[in-house]
Each structure stands twice: as structure tokens, then as C-alpha cells.
Amino acid sequence: MAGTCVVGLQWGDEAKGKIVDLLSGEHQFAVRYNGGANAGHTVVWGNRTFRLSLLPTGVLHPHLQAVIGNGVVVYPPRFVEEVNQLIEGGVRVGDNLVISDHAHVIFPYHLEEEKLIESGGSSNAIGTTGRGIGPCYQDKVSRVYGIRVGDLLKPDFLRERLEFIVPRKNKLIHAFNPSVTPFDPQQVCDQYSAFAEKLRPHVRNTTKLLQDGLNAGKRMLFEAAQGSLLDIDHGTFPYVTSSSTLPSGIWAGSGISTRKIDRIIGVIKAYTSRVGRGPFPTELDDGPDGLGERIRKIGREYGTVTGRPRRVGWLDAVALRYTSTLADVNEVTFMLLDVLSGLDELFICTAYEYRGERTSDFPSDADDLAACKPIYERLVGWHEDISTARAWADLPSNAQRYVERVSELLQLRVSYVSVGPDRAQTIIR
Ligand code: GDP
Ligand code: IMO
Ligand code: MG
Image: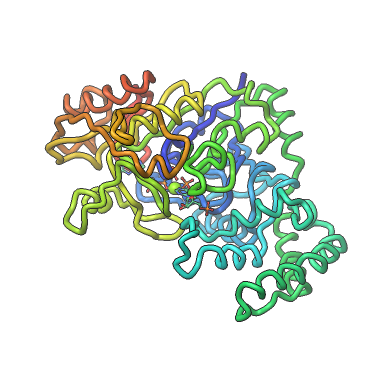
């Protein structure tokens, strides 16, 4: 048993990046298994701030072997940009970063296809990050249009594939929007062949690399991107992302059996946030002078990837019971508790009212979830600044009570409490 998984239990942005960073010392591998550059993880070390989208957060620690697994979708321009940013920031990036030859590649036509679906205020829009994630996974699953990282390294094969795919994509895009300039297969091929040379030193059979690592007794840290409620199968479909965000995605997305994972850490933000569309029962949609806006400002709830204001609301224990069970977590971490300081009262949703009935089950249909009204438990708040707390005993009793109540409702131990973005602003329990 040699693996840990860090997984968000809400709709993403639970501060998974901070937890991954804190756990880096105990591991030798850091692995991304799902999603792509739709993720946005912020890590703060004193006056240095790092933002990672496509690369595993573990790449910040050169002692770790950072792995972009086969389940990830890779946009080469973003890969190169992120590596350059790290090098400029003084982080060594070389052999310590590898990409699976089986990971699928995002092309410019994927971004265009996503725009067609998402633009024009369409009522079918999901509110995606616009990073080409859905269309690329679509091509992976449909097979004929999918191109993998390994294919980029075979120039003749790549040219052949693009000569087949690009004209078909052009036809499709033109049918929906004739004003889009068609893509030139040669140009796309030249551009991606140039990227291929930048990627080449990092491309590996990562499944074999990980299996060999396990056999050599190395410990692996699996970094889930997005949150459990955005999981393609178990999330609030269709308002989800296109990958398995739950730990179940590890096996398919890295080649490592989930039987090897002995620690699954569920990351919970002290309230709830969501970017993009979709039901959100505990949302505080109470205008520019409301509590929602106050939490958004204090918590700096604006998307790392798109800059969009995140929707915010109270903690939802019904949703958390659902996701913590699905993710089969052993423990949870409680993040951004400091953001709730200064409130007279706090609310935790412990059940829903659905068609006049009380239920503590999370509905399986997004429309049913939208029809649920939260039933709240009220707790007394605290007014002290808790951002300098470094031990459990430093927290005001009402802050302790809030954390303990969530722990009780989920029947799970809280292993870390976070009271600020910095690494040091953490209470280990
Ligand atoms: P991720 O996508 O789950 O890794 O989370 P993000 O990095 O997108 O969002 C979390 C944000 O909260 C980042 O800007 C972090 O720097 C910040 N953050 C992390 N922990 C805390 C905390 O305890 N308090 C506050 N105020 N901010 C935090
Ligand atoms: P991290 O890893 C929050 C959301 C988008 C949209 C939906 C689908 O930082 O927690 P996509 O571009 O994936 O097709 O968009 O999923 N979304 C996220 N929300 N945090 C993320 O990642 C997200 N990644 C995707 O806003 O609603
Ligand atoms: Mg994020």
C-alpha cells in the first residue's frame, strides 16, 4: 500500500493545491490522472505564489517525480508556458516532470468546437473553462479523431492524421459558424511538431514508470483535479467536467490500481463555491451588499483559470455525505476557515426539502437538486481573526464547534484546518 489521493469534495477550488503541497515531503511521486488545464491550483510560500493548471502541483518540489498520467488531456502551448513560468520563478523542471505517451492532445479546433457549444448565451451552455477539455475527451472516446502525445513524436504519422482530421473538423465547424476561418492542416502540423520537440524529453510510458516506482517502494500522491460534484458519472450532470474526478479515476487515468491507495483525503472548503452553471441549493445569491459578495471578496473567490466570480454559499453536508462516501475518504481537511470570521451566525445544510418532504439523500438528477430547498442548522460565529492560529487550541471555541459539527455530520476525522493561503497557516490535528 503506497498511495495517497487528495480529492475535492465540492465543486472544485477547495484548496487541494495547498494540501498537496503540504504532503509533498512524504511522497516520491505526484500524479495527475484527470482533466487538463481547466484546473487551477494556487500554492503560497511566504511572498512567493505559484499557480498551476496542467502540471501536477508536486512539480514545485524537484525531489518528486511529477507525472501527467494517461487520463489527462494536454494542451501543448499551456505545457510549455507553465514550464517556462516555473523556470523563471526559480523552480527546476527537467526529468522530474514526465507526460504519458497515452495522454490525449488538445488542438486549436477543440477550442473552436467548445466555443460553438458554449457561446451566444446558449441555454445548453455548461459554463466551461473554455480550455477544450470536453471536445478532446469526446475525440478520445470516439477514437477516430483522437491524437495522443506519443503520436506527436512521429512526424509522418502526425501529418497523416491531421490531413484526415482537420478537413472534417473544418466542415463541422463551418456548418455551425461559417465565419470561422478554416484550420490549415499543414500549419497545425508544423505548429504541433514544434511543440512535440519541447515535449519529447518528458514523454514516457508513465504506467510502467509508476508500476516500477511502486515495486521499488515509492509513495505516490494522486492529485485529483476539479471536485467530486463535477465528476462525469457521479456529479451534477450535465453541469460537470468530462473526466472522472473521483479517486475511481486513478486506476484508468494512471494505470495504478486503487487497491494500492491507503489514504484518501477529502478536501472541504469551509463554505461552498461553484464556477459555471448548474444547481447549487445553498447558494447565497443575495446581491452586491449581501453575504455572498462579502464571502466572495474575503475568500478571493474568482476563478484561477478564467477570472470569473465564483458563486458562493453555505456548507452543504448532504452533498458532502454523498461525495465523501463516493470518494471513500478516510479523513477530511477543512480549508479557508478564516474567511468565515466576523459573522454572527453560520449555517450548515443538513437536509433538503424536496416537494414538501424532508430528505437527507442527494438527488441523482440535477433538476431535482435544483428543486431542493436547504434545511439549515444554525451555529454561532466568531469575531476573532484566526489567521495566526497554529494549533487547535488557538481557535475560538465557536470555530472549533463549527469544524467539529461538520466532522460529526460526516462521521470523519478532520486532519488539517487551514486558516490562510500560506503553507504556515495550517493546523495539524
Ligand atoms: P484548488 O483548485 O482546489 O487547488 O483550489 P484553488 O487554488 O483554486 O483555490 C483555493 C484558493 O484559496 C487559493 O487562492 C489558495 O491560495 C487559497 N487558500 C488556500 N487555503 C486557504 C485558507 O485557509 N484561507 C484562505 N483565505 N485562502 C486559502
Ligand atoms: P480545480 O482543479 C472549479 C468547472 C467549470 C464548468 C465545468 C466544466 O481548480 O478545482 P470544463 O472546462 O472542465 O469542461 O468545465 O467544470 N470546472 C471547475 N470548477 N474548479 C476546477 O478545477 C474546475 N475545472 C472545471 O467551471 O462549470
Ligand atoms: Mg482551483
